[in-house]
Image 1 (tube, rainbow, N blue to C red):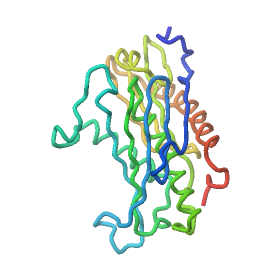
Image 2: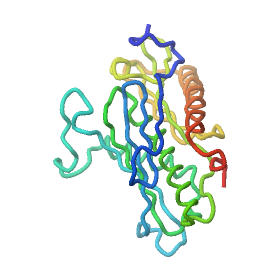
Image 3: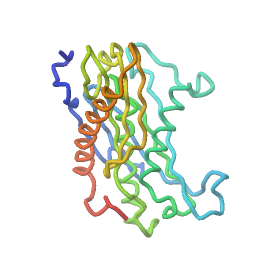
Length: 244
């Protein structure tokens, strides 16, 4: 049924390569099938004005797609003078999700910048970015703990994301571009390792969908996220995850 022959509840092949960049405090290269995203996290002293002198840190994100990441060349955001609405939506989503598992009161007055650059896009770039950004964030925190910059682990858990949708009348997991373009429903799910939801983004591209179908899509996404959380754990130090 699916263009690449996967079962409805099957993820694409997912690969995470941690510490991909030499200069970043934390980084990861993540592949979801043919979607590939380079994620990095850098720590900087200082926080946004609304947090100054409060003894708390901040976690935020930037997202972009490289010009050759799609079939037709994309213009860089600086050529347009500002980020487009989709870009802003995705980077805000990534920032919110990462903050959901970080004790910002343990960061001091510093900002952790997560940068997600899509090298190649074949659907699910936001979910791949978020899942990889968590690994880069955790690697960054591990480094800051190791060198004494941070005194206590600010991580409270893990977070990952995956897409689901209704394609040809059936709920499927982790849509590629061909499926995403033809799906009747497109839904992105963000969840922590404790099973708590951070965000659900669901849209009927064709006919409206029912509560029963929504429950099916969420359950399918939960199953996929459990697999992604396990892949994150495979490339992170065991004593880091939990959970400061």
